[in-house]
Image 1 (spheres, rainbow, N blue to C red):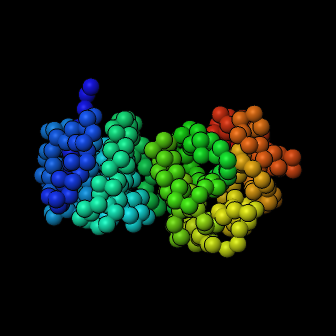
Image 2: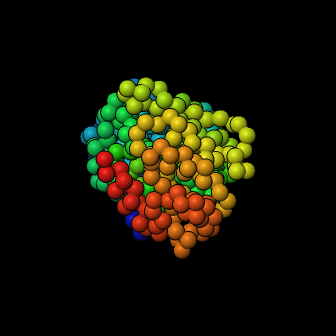
Image 3: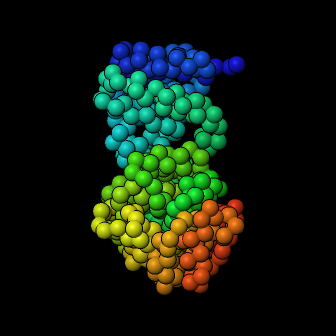
Length: 347
C-alpha cells in the first residue's frame, strides 16, 4: 500500500516530534521531512513532493501565511494549517482558504500544546482526507477567486433552511454550486451545540464554495456560505446601501418555533434589509420553521424553492410552505441545485 507522505513545517522541535509521532503511529502515513524555517520548507517541499504539508502560522523567519502563498505558486500542495492561531477563525482562516489551505487543526493550548495527542484521531483523519483531494481541481478554484472588493458587492442571496435530514441534503446542494456563482449563502440548520463549525468545514471540503461558521460582524462576500452557529439567531445588517455591502449579526433572543437559530429570523431579516434578489430554500424537517420567512421573501419579490415529499426525510417544513402556496417550485433534492443556479443567472 502506498503511504501518504507528509512534510511538517513547525517552529518548535518538541511540537515537530509530537506531530510526527502522532502521524507516524498510523501505518498509512509516513513523515518524510520537517522544517523549522519557512524558507527551508519552500526549498525542500518541491524536492520531496509530499502528499500533505502541515503548516504552522508562527515561524521564526517568515509568516506561515506567506509560506502558504508562495508554496501555492511554486508547488501547489495539499496544506493543513496546524496552529494555535487558527482558533481565531475569521481573518486568518478565510485568508488561508483564499490562499489554498484545505483543512485546519487548532492546537488546543497554544503554540506548544503538549496535549495535542488528545486530538490524535482527528489529526490523522483530516490528513488522510486531505490526501484524497484533487489538488489540480483545488488549484483552479483558488486561481479563480474574485478580488475582495468585488466579492463584497452582493447581488444574490440564497438562504437555505433545514432540520432533520438536512445536513446531507445541504451538502448535496452545495456540492453542485459552481465556484464562480454570483451569490452569497446563509445556511440555517437546526443542530446541537458544537456541531455547526464542523458542518461548515464539511461544506467547504465537499463543495467549491468557501464556508464558515458565522461570526458576529462577518462581512458578507460572494461565493461564501455562512452557517448559523448553534444557539444564535443569524441576521444580516446593511452597511453601505450604495456598495451593496452587508454584515452578519448574531443574537440570543428568545427561541422562535422552539429553536435557535430559526430559519424565520434569518429570512425575515434578509427580506427587510437585503436589496438584491433573495432565493429561499426550505428543506426536510419537522415543524413550520421557515413559513413566516418565506412569506416575507415572497412579499419582497423573492423566490421560494421547497423540497418534495418523496426526497424529504421528514416532510414537515417544506410541506407547510407548499400548502401555503408560497413555493415557486417543489422539487426533488437532486433538481434543487439546478433551479438555484437558474434563478441566480436569470437577472
